[in-house]
Length: 517
Image (cartoon, rainbow, N blue to C red; front, side, top):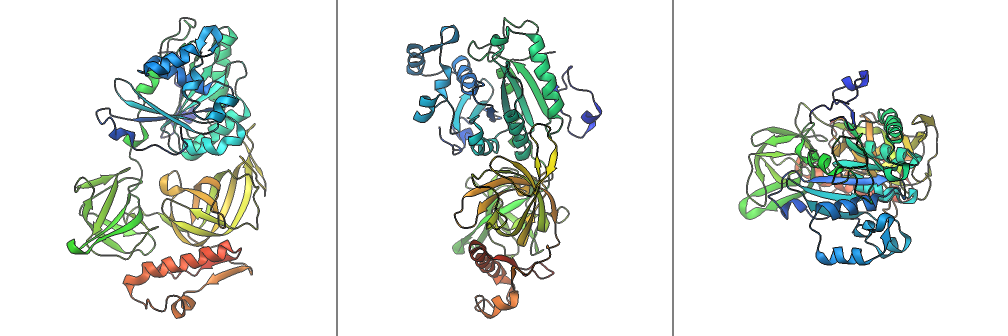
C-alpha cells in the first residue's frame, strides 16, 4: 500500500514496518469453513474483526455495509423494512448481525457473529465481536482470525478504557492493521474538530503498539455516511469510504513471513505404498522438495522427499498450506514436534517470558495447575509467576503478582519439559499459546512469547523430577533404547507429567543434553 500524504513523519515511523495514521487527505463463535472454496474466482479473501465499546454501533455499522454493498435476499430486506425504525426512519440494520435470540432481546452482541459478502474484487468475511467487558474472551478469539480490525468508537465519547483494552489485545494476537471508525458523527453535528481530536488521541496511544497501519474514518452507520457511500454531510473529509478502504487492503495469508515452521499434527502411514508422512500446516515461511529440515527437539535432520496434498504433490509448500511431508529418513518425530531449517531453528525453551490476557473468571492462583497449549503441543507448566499488569489508562506496566479477568499481564512461565517455541515477533504461530486448566481443560489465558530461554528454571523442593532412568525401568521398559522408539518414549513421559500436573504436583521431565526426550 502506498504511503498516504497524511502519514505520520516521526522518528518512530523509521522502523522496519511503518505505522501510518491515515485520515482524509487523499452466527456462531466457531470459525466457518474455508470460504475461499465457495467462490474461488474471488482472490484475496479478507477477514475483518469489528470491536470496540458496547453501544458504539458495531452491529449497525456492519448491517449497513451489508445493506448497501451486497445483494441481500428480498425477504431479508422486506423483514427489516417492515420492522421497527430507528433514527431518521431507517431500518434497524443491527438485526442483520445480532443472530442469537438473547442478543435480539438485550440489544447487544454476546457471541461472535460471522458474515461474509462479495465485492467486485474479493470476499470479505466479517467477524462481529461483543463490546461488553465480560465478553472480552470472545473478542480475543475472533481477533485471532482477523487480517484487519475495525475499532469502533462513539464520536460523542471518544476513546475509552475498553478501546485501549481491545487495541492491546489486537496487538497481542498480531493484528497489524487497524481502522478507527469514528461513528455517530451525526450526533456531534458532523464536527470536523470532534473527529480531529479523537484522531489525534488515537495517534498518540496507537504508537505503543506494533500496528503497521492505523486509519481513521468518520462515519454515521445508521444513515450510511462514509460506510459504502461518500458522505454529503462531511465535505471536509475527502478520504476513502470504509468499503473502499477494505477493498484495497492485503489479507494476512498473502504475506508469508518469517522462518519455515511446520508443527507436526499427526503421522500418516500407508504400508502398501511405503509412505510415512508428517501431516500439519506450514505456519511460517516455505519449504521445497530436496531441502534439509531439522526436528528442533531431537536435532535430527532429513531431506524433504515429497510434499503431498489431497490434490496432488507440490514442489513447494508455503505458509498456510496443509500438507503431508515425507522425509528421506524416517526420523522419529510425532505430534508436537516442530520442523524447521537448520539455519533458523526455534528455541528449545524451558522458561518463557510472556504477555497474556487473562480470560478466566477465576483469578490467577499460584497454586493452580496449568498446561501450555501451543500449535500442536501440550506442555505441563511447573511454575507461573505474574510480574506486572498493563495499565489500560496510561498503557504503562506496573509490578503485580496477581491478575484477574481481562487483565493483560506480563508473566514468566517455567515449563515442565523442553518445548520448541519462538518469540511472537519472529514466528507468530509458534510464538503464541493458550494457558489451560490442567484439571478441567478450560481456557485460562491466551498470550504470546516475548522471550524464550533454553535454560531450565532451578527446581525447588516441591518439584518432582521425572527421571529418564526411572521411565526406562518401568513404564517404558518395553521400548528399549532404540532411536526409532524415542517419540513414543517422549509421548509416554509427557502423559505422565500431564497427569501429575493435573493432580497438583509440580513436575519436570529430565532432559538429557541432546534433548532426546
